[in-house]
Length: 123
Image (cartoon, rainbow, N blue to C red; front, side, top):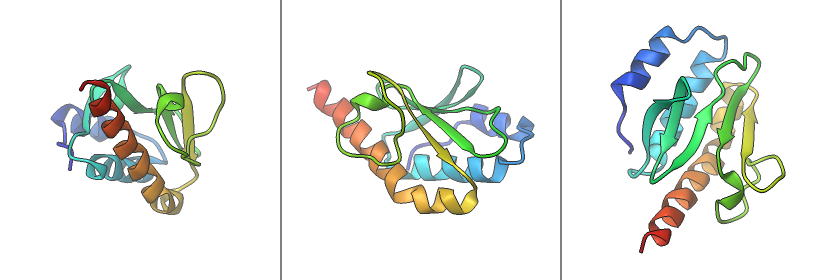
């Protein structure tokens, strides 16, 4: 499991949003997906990192959990959870806490694929 960052804990204490519970659960899933993943605050929001920026929350979304995968197009494998086109970013939107739980295997697979690819690119 990735290590919790006190800065992110403090961010969540201040976070006032109807999706807060679902966003917190998403955080737990991302951190638990792989021990290599870490979290920090970048761009005024929690960002999950391993040898680069993987994903950030879009904190202003109030009707769903919004995730921006900064270079999602480069994550190896087929990941239905990653939406969007273009050469770089991908996003995911999860409607509620139940959707977050259903997406858990997909989120875990994306985190592991990212970490494995980052390790492979540095050897």
